[in-house]
Image (cartoon, rainbow, N blue to C red; front, top):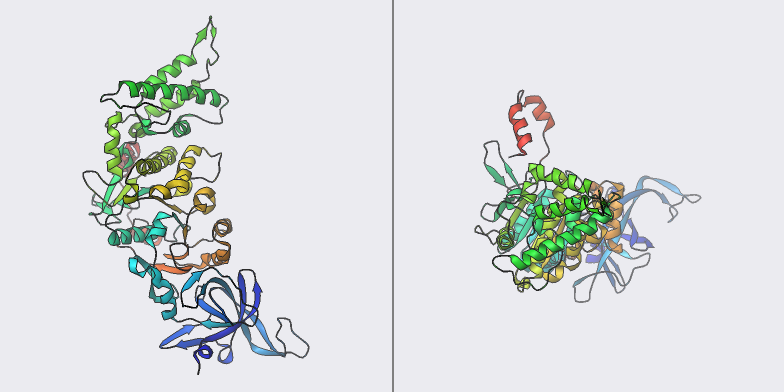
Length: 564
């Protein structure tokens, strides 16, 4: 029997834009048909499985996105009963499929479809061997991260250059496996590419945490990772740009905000200019701006502001008398809050000369060299986390922007909980932070800075950032708003695939974009070791958990802001 007959599973009955409808050939007594190709039994119509459409010179690969049934009738080929139609005891199976690419004459797979079939085109099952040939494109790079969900024996190889160099997003609701996916990708990346330079912004301490015995556990091997508490790293205020400092110190909704911003700009410029002229050793700068990364005295700036706030001219109140009262209260409140000491009262990063050492630390070139630097932001005050996270991202970008060897030293910045500091709303409180990250998204690729965006609320993340992502790793998403947002970001021909997201299991993802040869329903390998992201076992702990706690110790940790 010819192979085409053996693999035939149905016929195209409707062609509508990027989606085709297929009437499947029925198995015995209405059972779902199984096709045997070589030694392999292929179940027809599985969501996420691949099929081939053939018609004359057209040879298209498509993915199954939906299966449904219609009441089967004899005496008619339409979906509406005709007079005299005889009802059969089983239903006719209908599959919705989305074309994703074409097979050339030389057997190579190309993304995109030039010619669409018409109704009556044959639809054939594809063997694991055929699918493997399409994935062979990136096999030589050895970056395997999991298996095809519908073909567990088939490994999926991603292109690390396209994945890390053209930005990617990991999107999925809580419990879908985002942290596992991050850990699996990073572990595999360092295994294949030991010279990697990866910075992870860890907002919840999932990649480094203290166990009950007081020792630290990591989601990566100790030899490849360096854990840095953001407070100990000391990211001082003077490294912030003008817009970031405004986000931190000025309430944009206040009536006096415009005057505060203008005067603050002048004071900031003067402070940096004085440092450029008097620093020891000399900085040798011929030009200074409000964003130049050199030291300025915060106390001097406060004194100038206080003087302006009480200034009198000809025994009358000056033009800005009282305009800075709230500004001064806000900044003094933060100075009196020990949680902000790492930012506003740096102990080691208190001179312009200390910048080089800090940069070496967080790109992995410090005394302890590491491929992965985990910056733990869990101990940073909630209201300042976005500013600190965006500042770290900006420093990574600036490092390679001014690095003449940037092509030899690519950096990946991985942003956990990105919606918290890369908001979609342009008028957000953290507009300056958003602007910094959007610059990385738009320009980072040119200077060897890759961006990975991880979020459980895709529709709250900056559209500018997500639109620059070349690859989307979409885990389970059930929220209609989030699904719709993701659908609007991916190529139109792949938008229908988003419908499968609600049914994905933990660690299972739909991967779309440039890093994968074709859209893939992928089961990620389990990371080893795993991150600290498991759900709390309510049943087990409520049944057999502790009946007493050291509340005094909890209070002490709360007061000292020490979770570890």
